[in-house]
Image 1 (cartoon, rainbow, N blue to C red):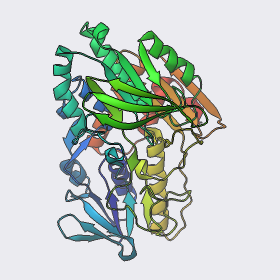
Image 2 (image 1 turned 180 degrees about the vertical axis):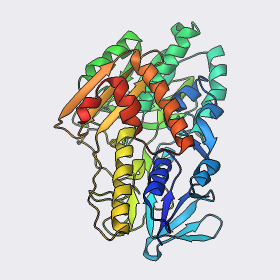
Image 3 (image 1 turned 45 degrees about the vertical axis):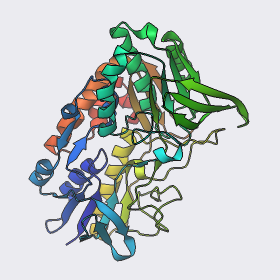
Length: 424
């Protein structure tokens, strides 16, 4: 009998558990361990932040759905991974032993790397977690009654830029609908070397399309930006040139701000030699397997991926939903192979595919592979993206409740884009 443990019950962990459960032998067991009882659909957080969604629209308890599929669920959370012992130390002092471990925790949010950043004792909001989005949800209504400047974007070291663009345009749409857009100057602050870089070196005409969209919506921007500190109602930003030399200093007043932080690996794995890199992300080989501890796999945002290119201000590489889905499938196939005494052979595609909703329209891109040069380098915009993102949300949540492991992107996102043929 083999015990396969999945750390995390998010966009990577839940599909991993369902797909693994379908592959195991009769005597094998799958266990999911999370630090809470609930799943929430992270891509919908920008909608939650402006009260277009409530928590209950995108969050549900996972226990009954996992247990219905015969998957054991523990919501105590992991305090520390002990890879030399094949053991997880839980927050309540108990332990869980494993034969195979799949780490799918997502990141730790590094708000502390910038003074005054974040919703926990800082002065900015976040849409990285539903709890943070709900804090904004409660404050946004008050802001619209006394509007003022908005500063939105992503700080140095950030790797997930799509939600920053989404939130900027979703806020802009909401303000127009309330007929108060003229009272709210907006500035987009980003560590990217140019608008539309996205941590991917740009995709198609992402620079031209996103710059045009920002001009059209009267959103100013500052690129190559380092946020040095945030005070109540004021952000201090240092702008750099293309060689990384300091170019200008900005003091940006705001009445509301949402800034995405850099990511770190979670405390349960941080600093374990051979398992993580210096930022705490899980080191993996081409089969999603850790080179030192070969019964440990990792999928999703917690995986160590080097930056696509050197930039004047440091930034990371995003992991999109399609890429995570591909990691999950490869990992399942490799563990299945190992259970039968064979070596792992499956590899994730690591293609980047993304939908970004802008409130009434949006943009979509495909980068195959994500690191240039690419076989496919496609970027598009249109109202259809807004509709596709809603369909994506509804379908994924339904899929998680049904406990199916069918590939969502082939059925919804790629079909909506009309580009499923690109994967053939």
